Image (cartoon, rainbow, N blue to C red; front, side, top):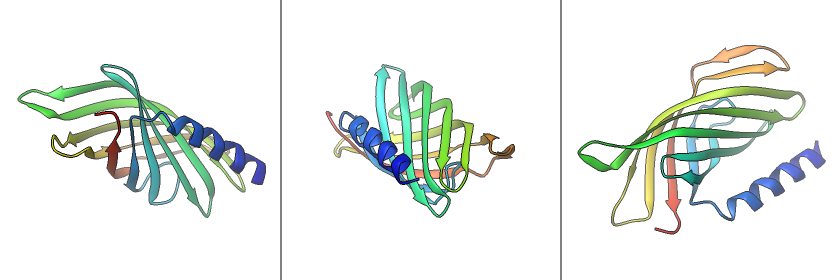
Length: 147
């Protein structure tokens, strides 16, 4: 458990050095706990990876969701919607692995390097046991680097 925690934390920390956005996600989710470290890594104009890392009584949880649609809403260029999916894992007493979907909306402030968003993340756990959860609603507050 301790080795897995150290490896996972190191990978996430190294990866976040080049993050375009980093912040906190408040709300329920498929990786446990009600608060997560939230990061965004751009991989194209309308494509990005949305990552989360959380620590809870169940262990360390990580998710990497590829947002394959990230587009501005007409007439509101600072308001974007996104849609994506990707894997999640929880390493603790048990090892849980699954896939989550994501749909959300976010607002990018012009005057501040701040982004606020709301999302919904249904998830399907497939390893240690099979279960589906549709209760993953969250509020994201992130700082944007390299404006």
